[in-house]
Length: 288
Image (tube, rainbow, N blue to C red; front, top):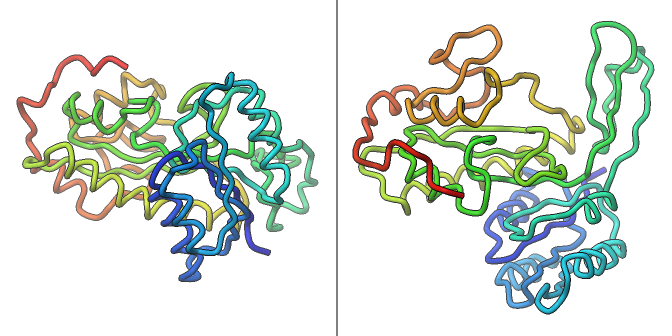
């Protein structure tokens, strides 16, 4: 059975389009139940309709955040889906919205560990005993940085101005904090010596368009699983330091600077070494 998703957008919806193209090309076993926008004039809505997808919109202007979220939840409740996917939805979601899409919790006997599990479950395998399926919000976001570094609406600009030599994309579950939550996937892209902001963003956007359908396909086939590692102490300061140096932070079983144990575009190590960025705002990060 295909994964069913509702997609929330605010603008042109290029990540939404990447999902719809992947479905059309049968690279993604999923169904888009509805595309919603807080901007009735968003180009993404007409794009979705060209793919035969139902659309809904409701402007947030002139409404309190609570009132708007209550109305959005009511609109989405008319459709059946497994996950909400934020594909450039430029609204901070409050617990009121998130609680409407909270999964349940249950125990799965250890003899069933090999079964394909529902997409509504995060599965954490213990050393012994049962598998625990933990409740979470069924909301997925894609963010153009290696979180926890550079949260916020201007991640590409902030990373570029900071002078990173290695940046990346994060797909994560949404929680009550902004650009925070269990990480489903992270991939890196290198900053080239002759990059300007636009070429830097274009390289990242191409990676976004590849990653999001891949993550959804993984969920469709195997259910939710969070990355089984933590970057060093997991702090934003560590990620910033390593990204500026063109390295990934240390992962379990490796030293800082060694090839990271996660998918990385080919030849990133060689390109990172060749990319000696200077005069690009190195020093203090851009204020959020």
